[in-house]
Image (cartoon, rainbow, N blue to C red; front, top):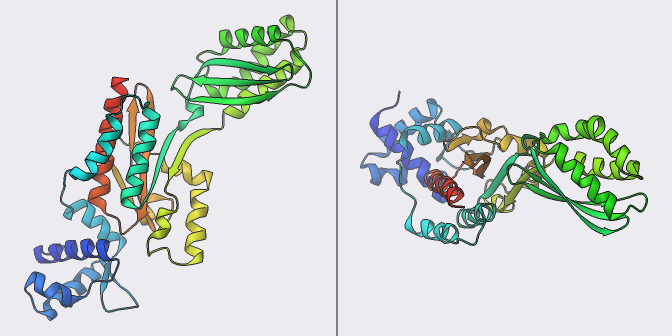
Length: 334
């Protein structure tokens, strides 16, 4: 248990370190708290013993520990509304009626990434959670076409399809008609097996070059099942932070951003804005991830901000709460 003055002291050290990225010494705190240097040093020692502060090897000052940041976020951080300046920048996006929801989300996260100097991520549900709604085909020539797959959540993806032999547009149209009749409402992960066991025997009766057509569509629709909507903005921003100042630090964090395994760990299942500090986030001990889930007309996804543990927590949390509410409101308007 820490006392009232120690809580105030911890809040001051966390907020000062967030701003300056320099260890906080007792001298700078004496005037603020109108206490002797010895009293401040004793309180800092108590906070260090409790696990909330750490002493760095480069100075006599202290920095918040992971536990210190967690205590600050849970108990000391004062809730604030999003600033007028930040709100204005985001409002311009959501007031633009011509922007579709996905574009509004992406552009909003670009703004947040730009004004915070952190990395932002929008992560849609895995396409395996989607159901196929429609297949459209655009013939390019007798051996090439573009297949467009649309799911019930609004996910759209196009594939270039190359045929081993020439196939008439009539046969392509007939195959597309059969696919749409038999695949609508099928979970994406179940499409390959349905193609193999239900659709292949049928197109054999209608299509002369059915093997060529079947192989092409099977390849296009099977590859679709492993995809996931994900967009990073400001990947390099986190490297501007002084915490990442060695080549090894840079290589490590960039490799994490490129990892498919890491992307899956960004996904959030909670509707509230959640803060995962250091070892809590399963991505990297040196970062904090603030994220939340949004839901719009059956579609859902995750929006997240990744930055150093020395993050402007209040600002980022307020921005994500504001963004989440406006995403869901815009979705209702469309």
